[in-house]
Length: 289
Length: 239
Image 1: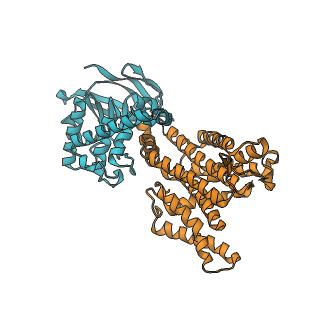
Image 2: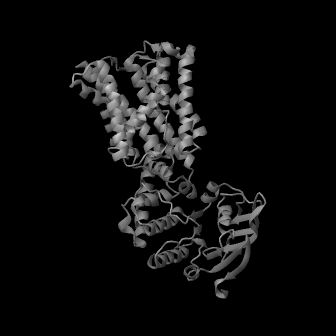
Image 3: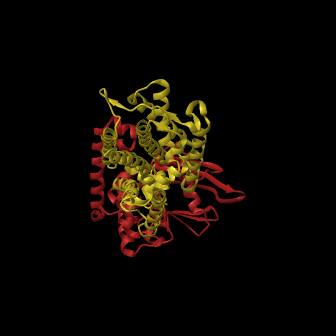
């Protein structure tokens, strides 16, 4: 039973990551290869404040969000002014810088050894330290983020973020600053990825740089591509497929060594089929370009 | 009629090539001025200079008494100058009414902080603007397009919708770049009527158009350009 709850927790973390990527890619049209950076900055901020300063989860969370916002702001001031391929290249550079920092800034991140002993969250003295309780905790976060989007997608600023995606020059001609809307989108995306990072760090109680690589960023992007960008349902579907696909393979009773590779082969195959036959993804509103 | 736009000795040169040379003219409020000329006459560069997309080498542009020479496109657009391109630039994945509401300036919810700290005002204003957009579409007989995705509209419909965005934006001066290109006679007539109606509501127009006869039906003035200079300026009575 614990295994099922573990799968649920991972699913919740990936739903949050996919929704955060959807904010940038789906709503803003900014193809980011650095989603793992904001995921990682949230995770490291939580891990460092909890293990080195003795913060509780509820103190570490705002710090993690703040650090994600600052990182997003700094990044958006530099990369928010460039578009399309140039933006993607800037995110690639950010991803490489972040990984190098996490890997080499040993006094802070402990390098490849990672940070262990990250305590679990507590609510009213109740420790969330089992997969079942964490699954409920994670579900609350997912629900909050989904409710946020149900509201946010109807707001004027969300429309202008999407308008900037569709035609930046037209937004400028109307006397609105497209860079502002890109900046807001990058920040929102970073905050949600940062929350996912705090969940991951406090669930696994150990993090190291290998969880926040370029591969992870591409994977998060692929999840959105498969589920479809621009709607809430798309990234959720993508995350469900990514997490549950290997579980289905278990019914085929393959040896573990083959099943792990088969997961990526099937996921890759699905990606190719989606790009070929349903370029907007399963439930996408917007074609990622 | 009082003056809205005044251009004095405007010059632009790129590496020795001067697409605009010593251009001076004034435009009155609520007027419609046609700008014509052959390809390379400097019409589009003139629009680029007025909207701040390129900076003049010499000369002054005054709008509503304010010197806007060399200001950024964003600052100029915020003062009430809008430009519509030959190809309609709609937000193709948004609905038609969403396009119109997105064009409006006075929407509290356009700012994230306002949305968080003044949610009620933001919601009320947005609802008011949505109603204004629907009224505008009804006024121009386009209400049936309201809930369609803008990218799915025909070329002519997209042009008409992009034109409606002028009225939502609180524009004072609209620069139209070949508005009638690619339109059928019925749509041109509809477009002309919309221009006249918007002028009566206070909007001033500068129009680049090769389809001269159609614009002359509604224009008050005509500027002809040649080799970057103004060849003739006429009010319509003398054309």
